[in-house]
Image (tube, rainbow over all chains, first blue to last red; front, side, top):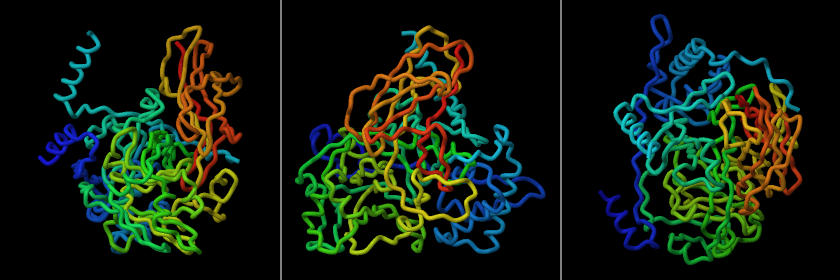
Amino acid sequence: MRGVLIVAGLLLVAAAPPRIVAISLPAATAMFAELGPGQPSADAINNNCLACHSTEMVLNQPHLTPAEWAGEVTKMRQVYKAPVSDADAAAITAWLVAHDARRRPETPPKSPAKSPG
Amino acid sequence: MTDRRQFLALTAAGLAAPALAASTDLRLPGGPSRRPLTEAFPGKRGMILQRTAPPLLETPLSVFNAGVFTPNDRFYVRWHWPFPTEIDAGAFRLTVDGHVERPLALSLADLARLPQVEIAAVNQCSGNSRGLFEPRVAGAQWAHGAMGNALWRGVRLKDVLDRAGVRAGAVAVRASGLDAPPVDEAPDFAKSLALDHARDGEVMLATHMNGAPLPLLNGFPLRLVVPGWFSTYWVKMLDRLEVLDKPDDNYWMAKAYLVPDTADGGIAPGTASFPRRPISRMGPRSFITSVAAGARVPLRPDYALGGIAMGGDAGVARVEVSGDGGANWVDARLGLDMGRYSFRRFDAVLQPARGAAVLMARCTSTAGVTQPLTGLWNPGGYMRVQVEPLPVDFV
């Protein structure tokens, strides 16, 4: 309601900046999916990672090696201080690696880039 | 009229079937490459959704074909941490403290009484085009749309620092904003400029872009504008300037946004250890925006194409285009010069042959730097400047 009043006020006093600017961001409700029977559970990644970022941050990444995925989890804990237990960190990494392994590349993998000089 | 009816029909269909929301293919090597287009963010429309929270919204390349200034509602969005979604502009204060004679708490009205300046400048994310790096690297997987050009209005940082009175021995100015990490111990976002740079008369505190107050998603009510430098320094929702008497060792200067300390910021993939420096100035880039990659183009004897170029930390001196993958080049006609830090339009006419073709544009800055044909690589996916091949099919 306040936003409507602000817009009306702007029309009257075009030069004055709006006193209160408020927006409503879309809710990030998507969860990481279970990968199926015998696969690592998505519980740990859903319980820990979504507090700071939505799922796309993970799902839009290119193929990473298991060591690179583990490195990302370590960075989130050590640098960005995500309060993740050792057990959950292992479970998150397991989900990330399993999810990456079952993604079908959209185009054939490239050979390593030639030295870019 | 037909077009309008079709548009209305499409709109109605879109409303009836939200599940069929539009998406776009960013053509990132190896994928994942498809992203939804979103209308869900207030004040923004038709943005490529890279991440919902904290928001990463990319500008579709076609937007840059409509003009050298990027409309506020199409301007890209990038946040590291959560930020306030309600700002009381009347209560807002910019704190200026640290190594100064007179610490200040400036209201927006105080800033409005200082001399107002305007500059056209490209704001480009350090990791713009990261998703096109090969080998691929982790991080926000942008195509080319983590950039935009605006006419920024506000006050000179120099004038604000002069009011506070910088004390002898000061070396840098650290800027931070209202965004804050969700975990207290995590590093709050802050960036520093050397004192001489901060006082060069070009660096400014912007309240307006393209004639309107900054959109909240682009840093309302105040952001740093650092012409010619990557956007990591353009701190949004700027509420504190701290004058430092020693170099800034905070995480975002000392550990993040570092590039290999080589001439072009590149290094061979797999190099284990190398000297690094904070990312800083931008280089020249150019993008053909009149046609999309992979398009089937009806063959005509004279094929007109165009796009935008930037000089980076200098103006645009020259743009050449090629219709044969870089074997032959012709000079493009340059559009109006809106200032050395602005995008500049280019247009050219080619005589293509039927079949597959690779279009290219190549910018040379007024500093004499020309875009290379081969790409650099670094583990952060930063500072891409190479010529961007654009495959099309003339049919």
